[in-house]
Structures are given as structure tokens and as C-alpha cells.
Image 1 (cartoon, one colour):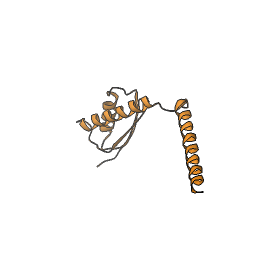
Image 2 (image 1 turned 30 degrees about the horizontal axis):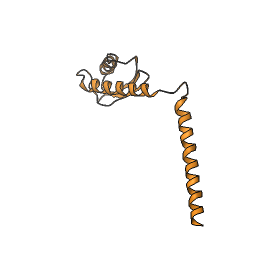
Image 3 (image 1 turned 90 degrees about the vertical axis):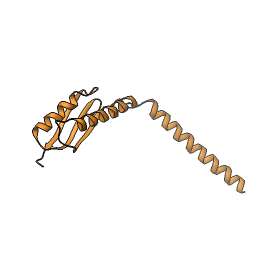
Length: 112
């Protein structure tokens, strides 16, 4: 009796595993047209990392409160800077980073 119950449980687990695998393969093989590919995600992550490093090293940008997000080569800057010169300088630094197609500068000027 215990053997039959064990076989039923093992069979159920196998069916669920196969169904999950089939679903994963189907969704992985045909991504929607609007989704980001793995390559694009890696490129965007690399661009974000480069931009953050450049901003931290830039002597003409006086803020560590800048948040960076990248999607398909478009870099979005949010956060705060102490002056409009810093806002402009941050955008200029980002524009010169390899792989950046454009910059959306949503930085807010807040006096310290």
C-alpha cells in the first residue's frame, strides 16, 4: 500500500517538473518583441557600471546622490546635485561614456 502511494507521489512530482520545464522552454525560446534580451541586459549593466565609475571620478560633479539606470543604451539620471553646473557636468560626463546613446537628466538641484 505504501509503495503505491509512493509511486503516485513520484509520478505527480515528475508531471509537475515536466510541465514547468516545458513552460520555461517555451517562454525562453520566444521572448515578446518588447522584452530586453540577455545581451542587452548585460550591456546595460556594463554601461551603468561605467557611468557610475565615471561620475564618482569626475572632479567637476560634486554629488554622490546620483542614481543611474540604463535601458537599451539610454541612461537615466535621478537624484540631487548642489548646483545647475553639477547637473550639466553630470550629463556631459555620461554622454562621453562608451555605449551611451542618450541621457535623460532628471537630476534636481538642491542647495546643501
